[in-house]
Length: 287
Image: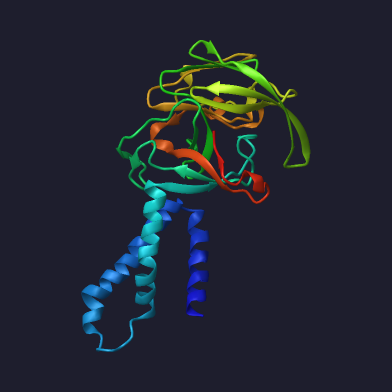
C-alpha cells in the first residue's frame, strides 16, 4: 500500500509541475530531492539510528528511486527521448498519435535544462526532421522538417520550394484523405520531394492558399523575409533554421513565427516505436 500511495503522490506532483516547468527540470528536482535525502541519511541520520532499527520510509524510497530517476534523466538528456505527435502538421510522414524517438546526441551534447551545447557533433541538415523548443514558448516542443540552414535563401511561391535559387523537383504521389479535428474531411495532393539527401512525401491542399498572410506574426529577424501575394522569400540568419511541416497548408511553422535558434534544438526524430491507431507504422524509420 505504501508504494501505491507514493506512486499516486508522485503522479500528482508530476501533473502539477508539468504545467509549470519542463519535464527535464522536474526530473532534475527529483534527483536533487531523492539524492539529497539519501546523502543526508549517510552523513547524519544513519549515525544516530540504533543498530537494527529500520530506515525511515522516506529514506527507503529515496534510495530505491534515485538510481532509476538518474538513469532515466541521463538517457533522456544525452541519448534518446520519446515524444508523441500532437498534430497533423507532419502528415503523411508522421500521424497524430505516433510515438517517436528523438536522437539527442546527433546535433551535439547539451547541458540538461539550460540546453547549451558543450560538445558539438553535427549540425542539422536540410531535409532532416527535427524536434525543437517553440521560439514563442520554449516550454512547448514542436516537430518540423529543416527546410533552410544558416545562410540559405528559402523561397516558397505557388506551393513550390526553391532553395538557394534551385527549384526542388516534385513528382506526383497520389492523394491523401484524412479527417481534421472538427470533422473536416480533407483530400491532399501528395508529391515526392528531395530536400538535401532526404526524399520524402509532402502534401498540399488544393483549396488552401500558399500561406495565410493574417497569421504572419512580427518575429525576431523578420527583416530577413519578404512576403507577397504568391508566397515569401527568407534568408536564414546565422545560428538559425527555417522549419516547415510536410503538411504544407496545415502547418504552423517558420513562415508564420520565424526562425528557430540553435539553442532551441532538442534532437533529430528518427523512429516510430508505437502507434496505437496505426499498428503497421510501428518500427517505421522517419525519412
